[in-house]
Length: 403
Image 1 (cartoon, rainbow, N blue to C red):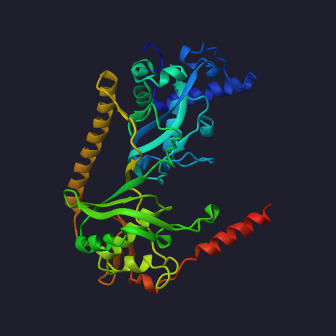
Image 2: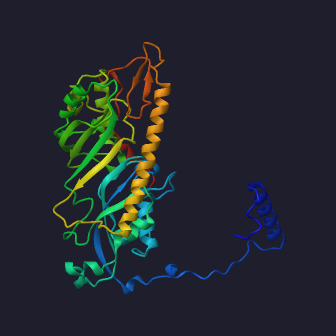
Image 3: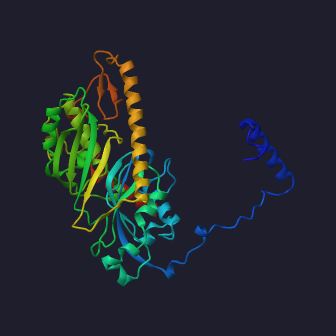
């Protein structure tokens, strides 16, 4: 507190740093050497001396600050949700190496894109335990186990929090392959949209269909079966003019939900009839491959729930540590609500009808900006993407050439 630098300006501090760097270089030393004793928390740990156990974690995150869920091999513009969680697991010595998820049998339920949020995402992995293998099977020993939930929540940022844990998943449990269904919600504002027509179109998604015209094709995955089953598909009214596309299915293709929503918006704007969904699902006639159209924005999409066989989930219990987590979540919510109220004031101040020409059409993509077109071209008149057979073959040929 008594340092002479306390009252220095930013510019003066920068100048002083530059002077010190020059002094270090002239003395032939690359940097000053500090001998700081490591804290007890940073001492290496011999994981071979500890038992491990397979657990499942259920958590929520707000996705707009992250480069999607899955950790990537290459650097990403934003951190990934998994990357942050794995770093926290390593920091509290529950796993040995955050850069090697396979080493702890790591598995995720549903991969989400950049910007997408989740309320009940699930991962499974093997972590360090205080109990022996025999003790882990007895529920009365649970209070002696590591407090996984609160320890991790103290390290995780305010927009990623774990709310449930399963200490004894069923034999062979895997967060990805043990999932029965995935439930998505897409939030949108109903202004200038015919909700009744969107609801009619949404019903066509229910059942087993070929969804190749509602996804992004990827030759590296070599997918040939695009049939997926939708268990429910409906439009729900929320509040303040907002609605939700409520969709549950056994499995989903890459970008499937956002493409489904994009078509619903075209119907809601009166640019396509509700029957266009049925036509896009019939790949043997009107649309053998996907017509060119933009998918909906990532921000409004939420992986709302992931359903599994009956499991013993333990919720975060009340107490000082959990109160801290709840306070953090409430504080974040309140901050966003205040920002929303202020943004509403600004909107009301500048609110006006669109100034585009009479012939211009703004395609709704769920982000409030959309895309302006001088003239709308119906889907059945548009250029078609290549078929999955062509894309798969080109990928294989390229792979052969690089060998």
